[in-house]
Image 1 (cartoon, protein in one colour):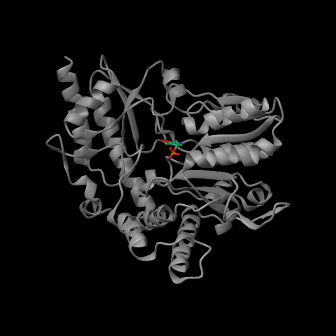
Image 2 (cartoon, protein in one colour):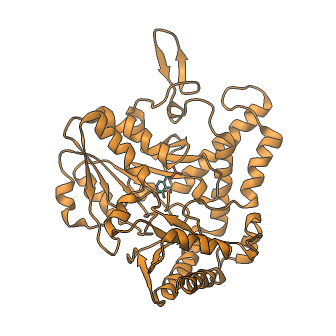
Image 3 (cartoon, helix red, strand yellow):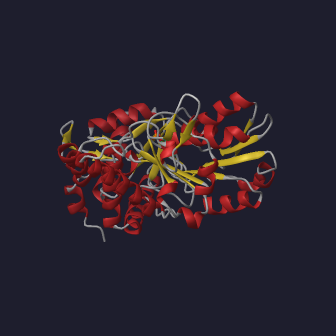
Length: 405
Ligand SMILES: Cc1ncc(COP(=O)(O)O)c(C=O)c1O
């Protein structure tokens, strides 16, 4: 069992009142809170070790480099990648998808080739591919979805064809919470020699991820949704693929030697890390991984599952509520509509009760178009949430219904 009170004591931000109510933070899918262990790791880096990495012979630079590279090893262990060379630090999932689009896919893309995504992707896993299609004349294809919020795989065999140059799909949907059957999708794509990128932004805070077991070619995520600072994330790529890819951005650190005639690029993973990286962010990400592993990721998953099941049961039992996204396999997210009330009004009334939820299209406008709605209200859970906070969600809905009765 997770000791929730002890865990909550690690998160100073949770202990405050908002609009004279104790804060109930249910917007974890947008960005999660940071434990003292992460805050201290970042602060201690600036207090004790701050220097640039890889270039200095002096002690601070060596310590900063050790901490930065140590964080890379932690990410490798977290994803069970085979080598640190397969872990590239990036700003977040968005930057990682753009990197793969431009460096891996673009060089092999011809007019009329196809890129396959799904209907429930976050804009970060749609727009970079659309831009690539505009640049090359390739076509964007979409795996459809069902009303329950599952992928509709009935046409997958046709969608994966000799023109498909990559399948890029989310592990967990941020708008619906659906956990997609990615291992199966990867197997099917690989049977046709199609590489696969998994957007794991909503999966890593909640589920154990093993990239070798999944056999995905690329896996991307953001630190700030998994209790680490903003502005840091990671791209996992199979070494054989990363080795053959050209660098994405040029600059310092990604080179071995530079002359006006010729530049020799650095080895992996530095080839993809041009310029001074987010050293403090990487160290914070490493601390967040330590924190999650200290709790046990399977325990986190079980506890959050219990919260989600309880919330789903309680909210579905209420009149005038439509839950958006009722897939069997879900993680963390409960999206809903209250009859006759715009989700933005729902969010505002919740805020008056001290309850932070997300309202809007969640950067997944095609999902909203699919359901014919402008937006949803979304509660999303983390391991520091409690059953009492599930009840606060239910009370918030009642309050909205009373005000709009
Ligand atoms: C599923 C998914 N993919 C990608 C992203 C983009 O993450 P970031 O903005 O941190 O790059 C998000 C953020 O909400 C997301 O939920």
